[in-house]
Image 1 (cartoon, each protein chain N blue to C red):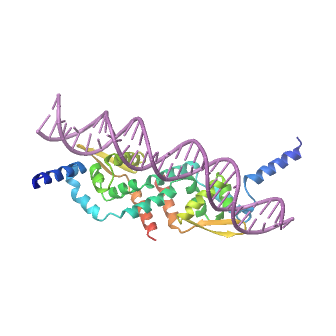
Image 2 (cartoon, rainbow over the protein chains, first blue to last red):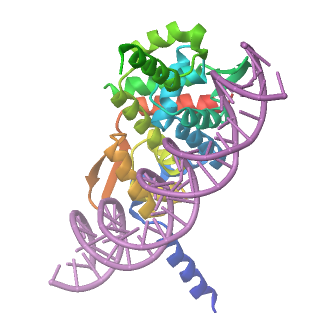
Image 3 (cartoon, chains in turn yellow, cyan, purple, red):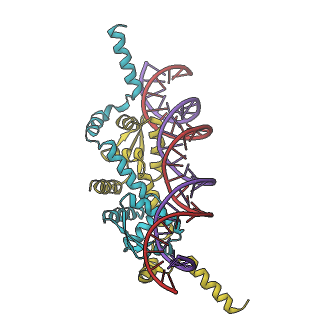
Amino acid sequence: MSDKSNMEVEKEELKTEHSECGGRYVEMVKKINDSMPCEEEFYDLSELFKMLGDSTRVKILYALSQGEMCVCDIVELLDVTQSAVSHQLRLLKQARLVKYRRSGKSAIYSISDDHVYTILSMGMEHISE
Amino acid sequence: MSDKSNMEVEKEELKTEHSECGGRYVEMVKKINDSMPCEEEFYDLSELFKMLGDSTRVKILYALSQGEMCVCDIVELLDVTQSAVSHQLRLLKQARLVKYRRSGKSAIYSISDDHVYTILSMGMEHISE
DNA sequence: TAAACATATGAACAATCATTCATATGAAAG
DNA sequence: CTTTCATATGAATGATTGTTCATATGTTTA
């Protein structure tokens, strides 16, 4: 295989990898590419929003944003099974969005920091536009 | 069936529906319950966050938050198939998070309003705590 | 009009997820 | 120590979702 045919193959690969329409934006794309957050950051970010991307969990977080409460309060407030609430609280705890302490028979949950509430509020503001 | 036994049954149902631990929080729960956003609001809110709850979509939105660009730019910038990008753009468009216009062969997408960017930023701030 | 390019879309598939049911743990009261 | 209450958890299931592959649509250029 000659050098020439090799180069031609590379050219072809380049052509199929991405299109040529870019024209106007190539420079911008390069710049953005250099300042792109890393894969992990995007992953964490989407994981965070994934936690907020469920009706039951959002309700729980909203309730807790009004003040700490125990599991049975949440069950009473929302229309969800105790089991479902418990499962979701576990996820929220793992994601460090809520914390809890034990008090007698009860487990008392609360929002772990108020960034969470801020994000919720921004979301609510957005959907009422 | 006498009135008395009827009342007893109701009492029992009440007991099994929710626990009695509430004690301290009952008043608060009532108050919160009255000011709770409606089902639909929670639904919309979780739908919004669901859109941000995927790595590919977050990347796309981040890229677009730097400026409008066409599909092939996004494909080049991120490491995702053209088909996957197109599918996700459709979802983002349906959710009104992005808008697009056609220019020749290209479809040029952009963030539909900067609430989106604000929410993204809040999220990024949160995960770097 | 045909070829090339940019984007969109339908169907299929694997993976993830939220809920339910049954049951386990843990704590307090009797 | 047994019962009752509050919460947690494992397994099963149905539903949703993101990607891929193949192909269609729409636009420009030759």
